[in-house]
Length: 116
Image 1 (tube, rainbow, N blue to C red):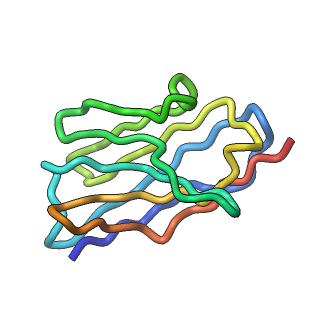
Image 2: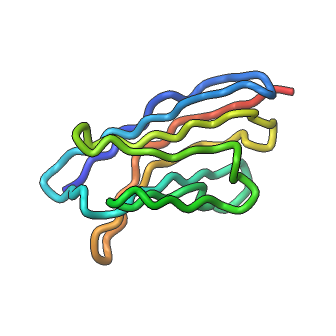
Image 3: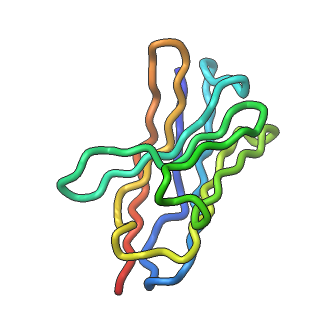
């Protein structure tokens, strides 16, 4: 089993910043696997925001490069998402994700609301 707990969401004005955290635990968790952040806006499908591998390689959805930064602290089993210059269209529930084999684990999500 893997447990993922996100934190750090909230209400912020356009142009502001937030840092999301995702703490992983459980016997099924491994630092050898990639971790990801997804988001789901109202009425839209969940989409990949960023991914980081065990070696630290990162991938970002094209439109987010430069504003979002994913990082991980392997010792703390925690992955972060630094979000700068937030826009109203970034409003969504953000989810942490971990995949091992054919199983994908999700956190409960954290709400990010950006006001204009």
